Amino acid sequence: METSDIEWRVWPGLTGYPEVLAEMEERAAAIYRGEAAECIWLLEHPPLYTAGTSAAPEELLSAERFPVYSAGRGGRYTYHGPGQRIVYVMLDLAKRGRDVRHFVHSLEAWVIATLAELGVDARRAEGRIGIWTDDGDSEAKIGAIGVRIRRWVSFHGFALNVAPDLAHFDGIIPCGIAEYPVTSLSKLGVAAEMEAVDAAIHARFGDFLDILEAPETKD
Image (cartoon, rainbow, N blue to C red; front, side):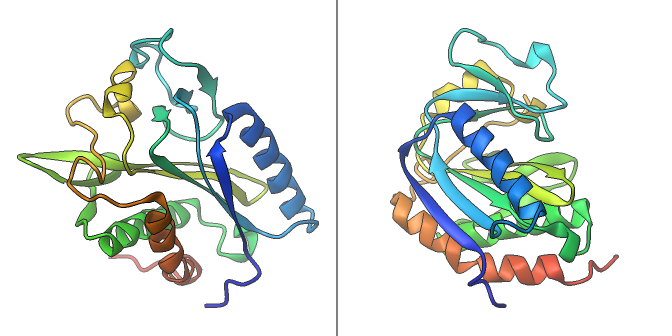
């Protein structure tokens, strides 16, 4: 799959959420108008919580702990912070089937394949949002997905827990799921540098596009 027309950008340091959100929305609009290339952004945010369109107020447990932003994406509350790789995906879905469910399914497959590159066996879980793996005797969430589609251009994307402070998740009920913990590559004993994580993400990007651009099969 040819991917050279899709721009990749790695943002250095910690990038403020409002600034990125504004630039992401501008870029998505430019992609729709045919004035900019599709793109993938990889970055880290300072500690913050974001509220998706389905966020319930009672799931924000510590409103004063970190800044809270309305994200406009699907989903509920999530945490972003240092040690978490954020991947924002801005693609023109008008030429890729116009199927939001299939797009999300393809993103999930991309995260699972990326984790496999890093030696972690991860999976979807029936009835639970996100990407899951085994952490000791429990299942735990290692990746979150939240997207928005406007005029068939995607933005937002997914977050992969590399080595964040997992205690920071205590201020919310992540994605509305209180019964299971969150985990990270670091907690699982995988000492991956962010550059290695980025390389794994990039290595499986072609597979993601192949899945996205193939007709979805029904079981």
